[in-house]
Amino acid sequence: MTEPNWIVLILSSALISALVNAIWNALSKYIDHKKETRKHQQKISHTYLAIANDLEVFAKKCDAQLYDIYDGLRERAEFHDERKLDNIGTVELDFSSNPDWQELPIKFVAEIKSLPTFFNTAHEWISSQWFAWADTEETFAFEEERLAYYGLIACKKAENIREKLIKVQKGNTEEFENHFNEIIEKRREQHIKNPDKSNLIPELHNHFKK
Image: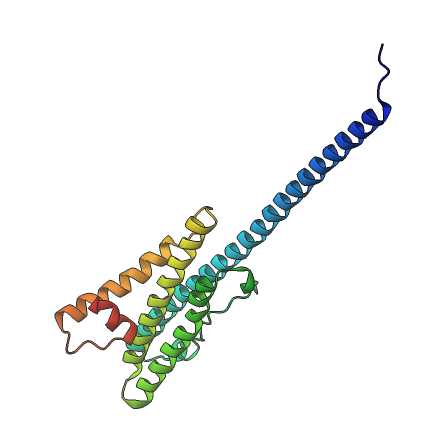
């Protein structure tokens, strides 16, 4: 009977052990990588959700401000009382969640972060009309358009984030959207009837040209 070659057996065992260790190490690294990737994706999803919430909060403020303007103009017309109009504050589009923008695609970040700039630029344009020629009612009409136009954009952006990017339930913005659309469509009808006499913020004027 031939005696076993112990050196061969030992080397074979060592080779098998090294192979098993290599496979295990590779598998462990793969599992750890999957966990880190999942963790990173979850972090990004939370960032997207926070931005959607910020946009929805802004839309809610726009909606509330529109009702304040309506009430203020009504009191001015019926009772010659402008106190409510005088107490109307300024709506700001800020991202109080302080999202980590560097985690997100550049194109998305550029689109979202440009909204406050456009919103503030529209406010500056309205102020210039006020100082140049617009009366109280005309100025607040411009402000209604600004709030409705950018409030609607915020709703649409938030919907896109929820439904396409993180695939979660739609936010409760339908009531706001209906209000914003109602104002915009009313302006559209007025513009169609009297295009030469309708004064609109530039954003709506360009929007109606499309």
